[in-house]
Image 1 (cartoon, rainbow, N blue to C red):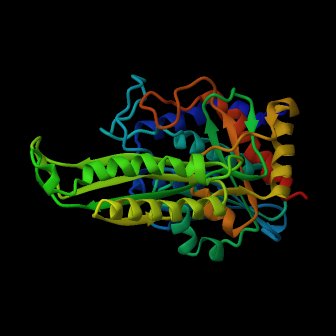
Image 2: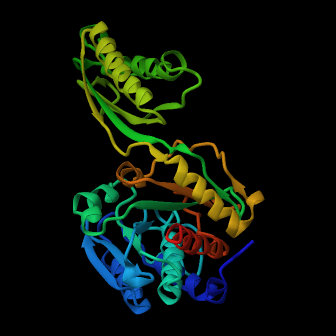
Image 3: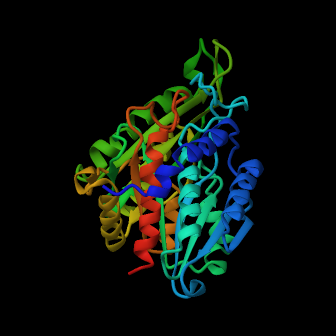
Amino acid sequence: MAINDHITASQAEIAAWRRHLHTHPELLYDVPETAAFVADKLASFGCDTVATGIGGTGVVGLIHGREGGEGRTVGLRADMDALPIEEETGLSYASTQAGKMHACGHDGHMAMLLGAARVLAETRRFAGTVAVVFQPAEEGGAGAKAMIDDGLLDRFPMTELYGMHNLPGLAVGRFAIRPGPIMASTDEFSITIEGRGGHAAMPHTTMDPIAIGAAMVQSLQMIVSRSANPLDSLVVSVTQFHAGFVHNVIPEKAVLSGTVRALTEPMRELAEARIRQIAESTAAAHGARALVDYDRNYPVTRNEPQATSFCTEVAAAVAGADNVDVDAPPLMGGEDFAYMLEERPGAFIFVGNGDSAGLHHPRYDFNDEAIAFGASYWIALAEGALGR
């Protein structure tokens, strides 16, 4: 096992950065204090370039290696935004912003990449250039796509891009990765059922959108059980059902909404087609009408096989081969780093957060013991990629 000595020596300081960021969470693209903190640190480390305002509030630091950075540029990415959750940890460094919390560990992701950036800027034991990318709006805002659309890869022509996320339930000191799909696409749908309202005592004079919606929910569950190949992963979840306003009136409309998660494009396309068919035909069978709004959100996060093999070697060098799961089961959660992997080869890896509360939970906290492993991984990856 090879934890970087520089990281070991500065573990407490990096943890302090992480706790500062945890205390001051910001949401989506509205991360001015977080972005300023990151940019100030990168400048203090002696990064050759610190660019701000990319994709709204994104930050990129460039660190040149030998020969002035001539050669390839490798990108390492961390996310910056928090979640609209009221924290319940009771920690001394808990959020000071009501209704905002770093409940997904982005504070830890930033701290690990900042720690690695400082070491890389001090030692520069590589050829080419390392680009450290700090992205806003991962939590539903597609900040990765916004940075790409704003010229990220034109201004900083990276040949490879790598990402990392902490994983509760995976022991600290362990990594998990797999080639191919590692996280799911995250589509959303909304179905508006237009019926005919009336008095609840005279249902025969109405086209009850609540009854129609209930039948629709039952049928939507059969997409996975009866339309999808059992060997393919697919989730269709109805998560909201809104209708009615008083106990003795059947309403005119009902609205259902939910999410679709898939690991392949064929399953994604199947789910969308079947949702439309079921909604429209179920409504029509009851004399009503259904309007379907289907939003294709984050794509599948797909690891390039060669990059995955390289990341596996790096993680094994840091934590030991026995502590790297090379065939981790994919997660049906989504990740907008997928947009970056559509543009450049690379891979996304999980680092253990130990026995913590789950992601997006009000009692979640990033485990500072993971900093040494994550930051050391970034350093070894950059040096290995640019020393090849």
